[in-house]
Amino acid sequence: GWTMDDVLEEELKVIDEKVGPEEHVICALSGGVDSTVAATLVHKAIGDRLHCVFVDNGLLRYKERERVMETFEKDLHLPVTCIDATEQFLSKLKGVEDPEQKRKIIGREFICVFDAFGHDLEQKVGTKPTYLVQGTLYPDIIESCPPPGSGRTHSHTIKSHHNVGGLPKDMKLKLIEPLKLLFKDEVRELGKILNVPVGFLKRHPFPGPGLAVRIQGDVTKGNALETLRQADEIFIQAIRDAGIYDSIWQAFAVHLDVKSVGVQGDQRTHAHPIILRAVTSQDGMTADWYPFEPKFLNDVANKIINGVRGVNRVLLDITSKPPATIEWE
Ligand code: XMP
Image (tube, rainbow, N blue to C red):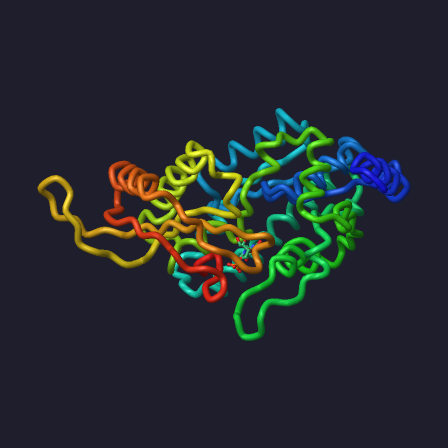
């Protein structure tokens, strides 16, 4: 039988044979486990002829950009350009309420930013990049399409749509997919050998369209993004403190575009509810809601109500998948 060390050695050899000594390679980092492990592996093979980009689309979680950039730079020494495209994304999303429309706009803007990155790089190093690194896993390849009529896009379709299908024709990038024969747990093992911090390898998945699919309606309306970030951070921190983060597949808060009446001190409030969603799952295809202790829920609800302006109710989503999806949009 082979070990992860064998897999690493084999992949390094493949990349070394594939990529010529003058060739440059690009990679879009999402902040997730797969793209990070793939980039770290390729960096080990070709060094700084790998050029990574991390896009802040304005739809990231609380301090996400700072946190992942610190890991990329301090722990992994990856050459990463961080592009703040917040204004670009949010201006295009203004007034857009339909979930599929939001996804399309985000996909399109991502390609624009990535395109510009490729052209800037060509100016800088004097040659067009020839390869693109993708963190495609084995299940991404074997998994079927989303249920017909669900109106949802499968995550691999999203990945390829973001990274390959939408690339400008003149770039003609060939693919490096060093994880394409591996399952998620094997990627984590490989990441460990590559010195990716274990805490990072255990991060919950996060959707490409980010908080846009966790804010009902127009994401730019009012203070929704900031409110959601704060509530989500309190929830996730409480989950970490309770020592249950690794038992949960995914946990997050959702912002609803409705208001209800409440009372705080002697003031009447009219504010938004926050939904808490946490599920267990093997692969995201089916999921069960996570059974929190009542005291945990009570404490989190109090922290959110007392700590986040504009929220006066906390609700818990107790729906499994199916019939619900994990995300709200
Ligand atoms: P659903 O909501 O379909 O989510 O039950 C299943 C898993 O996929 C993630 N997800 C996405 N990932 N782009 C992504 O990259 C998307 O548009 C997207 N939609 C859902 C979701 O977070 C969960 O892990």
